[in-house]
Amino acid sequence: MSQVNALQLTGISKSFDGFKALIDADFTACWGEVHALLGENGAGKSSLMNIAAGLYAPETGTLLLDDNPVQLQGPRDASRYRIGMVHQHFKLVKPFTVAQNILLALPEQPGEGSYRKRLRALEQEIVSKADELGFAIDPARTVDSLS
Image (cartoon, rainbow, N blue to C red; front, top):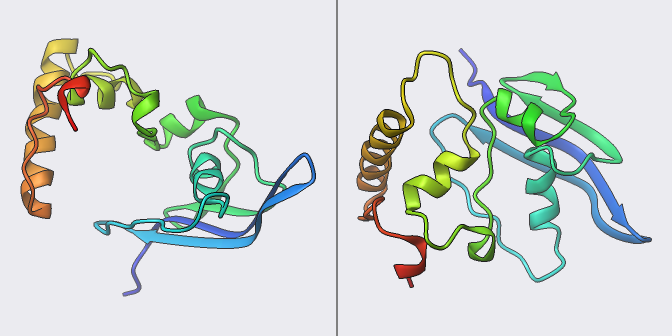
């Protein structure tokens, strides 16, 4: 049985005022994988992820979710597919906790309960995922208290 790609971007191109930020870029992530995008300033890392999160529309290329083609109409549409993006530190709400900042990007799902219930469940999930990846984080700490 072949593995289903959770997210696949193929042949993605994007320009800004004549500057070609992405030319025929590809990216694939399968369920359970962790990736890091590395590159110099202007290499297109943020542009590619902004396309995946529905913030930008690609000029060319295809976006697949679970091996099915989709055309995102914006970040709200992306959130329906449970795609969100935690932006660089300057885009976080500093007096909010780590968990509160992540919760801001998640769509509300019917039956998930109150804000406090969702926040507590997310805090537990953050601790669990961090433990799986071999590091510790306190999801109740405010972002401005982190280095």
